[in-house]
Amino acid sequence: MKRIAILGSTGSIGRSALEVIDAYPDEFEIVALSTHQRVDLLYEQCLKFHPKAVCITGTNLPIETIERIQKTGITVFTGAEGLKEIAVGTGADIVLNALVGAVGLVPTLAAIEKKIDIAIANKETLVMAGELVTHFAEKKGVRLLPVDSEHSAIFQCLQGEDILSVQKLILTASGGPFFEFSEEKLKKVTVKQALAHPNWDMGNKITIDSATLMNKGLEVIEAHWLFKIPISKIEVVIHPQSIVHSFVEFIDGSVKAQLGIPDMKLPIQYALTFPERKRMQADRVDFYALKQLTFFKPDFDKFPACRLAYQSIEEGGTAPAVLNAANEVAVQNFLKKRISFLDIARYVDQALQKHSVILRPALEDILTADLWAREFVNKAIDREEILPVSF
Ligand code: MG
Image (cartoon, rainbow, N blue to C red):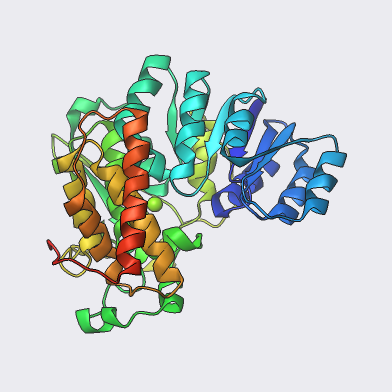
């Protein structure tokens, strides 16, 4: 029996994870769940999975629902501190970090400290503090099990292989809904258009990140840290069908790929059952129905966000944390219709230009850089100020 704590159980990844776990009640036990503000759904999840504790991070929430959860005998924690509590204090064997954004970093570090394996779906943790988190996990002998579909694909391709025999990693990207848009058309993209992803059903933040290709940029950084591969050996290829989840090319020219239908339950289950595989009731790849798999070179002039991500890793230190925080704020403002789609990358670029990088940052440096970038972008948007762009 593996005991699982899910941070972010009411989001897209969290709900898929509970479906995976529900199919194997003898294999898994849920010990902790959390939500930001979907308290009603959390209550339903509590009735079904009976965790020991939950955490609610949002504020101004209906007290009745919170009390209803407490009446079932489940301990209710709140806030960022509460996430730490449920990650380390519920006897979990694996913490599935399915939080969105920078809030995922601190509970991850707390779980590593307690030598609890992490199934990592919260890419911002690795983008902000990849060096810190991966070194710490290595030191503590903690496994970081990738949940992102591309990283799970690479992880699966690397089983039984020597990392030194890897020539390059090739991450696939669906290209998002605007892959074929002209620059003129991109200028007029609406929030509604950006939220309609062709292949994956995901939360709002990541759906916008997919449309700008920032998501792929964040994933390049994530792959760099997870697999310890130099950024120059990580490439991106547009693959609109989302069937090949990524490739690994080896030094002899051999290329391995992992394929599957676009359903997050597969990489989630692999992370939770690793090194085993278990049967899954789901659709299978139907090659006759597919007919073709196509691949295209990404256009970083049209979608500069991905290039900015590469650039931030080359700058190193706190630069990726600034990229990530600036992007989070810019995306929030796009969703509120305060800035345009193309402005997202412009504000991120601006934050990177203005930031003084701290190399080999400690946690405090990362959190300070994160806060600085948020304030910087918020203020720049308030003043409607955009500096000349570097791309
Ligand atoms: Mg992904």
